[in-house]
Structures are given as structure tokens and as C-alpha cells.
Length: 142
Image (cartoon, rainbow, N blue to C red; front, side):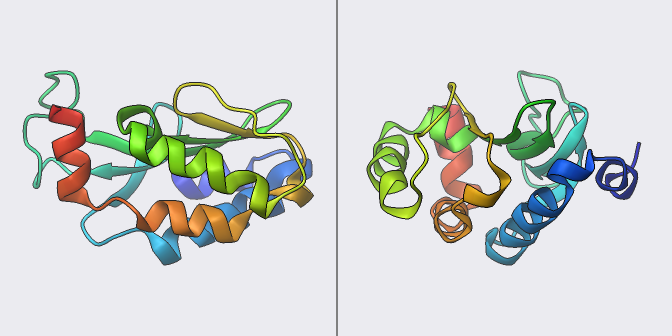
């Protein structure tokens, strides 16, 4: 499935919010990351041309950074930098309540938005800008 097909087939309840989230990421993602379908969702990755080691020693899989997906009960923002960098995670946890009235709902790298009207797009844009390709590779290789 292509990115366009994925986005066209999102539940209408989530479609506008997911498209807005993608737009914010597109406008703020540092140079070098590429958008592709990975793990069944649109994903921003470090391409193999930059990081040929691949992901988990899989030479044919680009290093994932951010994925976005519409699930049954939420929109998921999968930001691997939040999982890999305690500093970035702490910053995000501190900033989140300043940007939205909803409680932060997240797993290790997944931020779940169950109310499409309460997504803090400005905060997400800032989060996306905080880690470039080289820093993400350093964190990943950690």
C-alpha cells in the first residue's frame, strides 16, 4: 500500500487530524529524513543511503524515526527519539500540558491522541525539529 492509499483509507473520524499531523511533520522534519511506508504506516526514516547498517542489523530496512497511524481509538505518533533520548522525553513530558488540556497518553515511543481536536500541532512541530538525522543515529547507536 502506498502512503496516498493509506491516507485515503483512514477512518473519516481521524482523516483530517492525521493529514494535519503529517503536514506539521513535513514542514518541520530536518533535512535527510525520507517518507516511506514502513511497518504498515507512513514513516519518516533515515534512508539506507545515509545509514547503510539498517535497523536491527537488517541491511534492507531503513532506520525508523517517526511513524504516524490512525488506529481504531486513537492517532498514534511513533517518535523513536522519545524512546531513545531521556532528555527529549523529559522535555516533551514537561511541555505537553502547556499545549493541550488532555492528559498525556503514551507508551515507550507512541503518543496516542484520542481526541482529534486536541492534538498540540505546534508542540509536535517543535518536537520534530529537535533531533536531526546525525543526532538520531548517535542516539540509536548509543
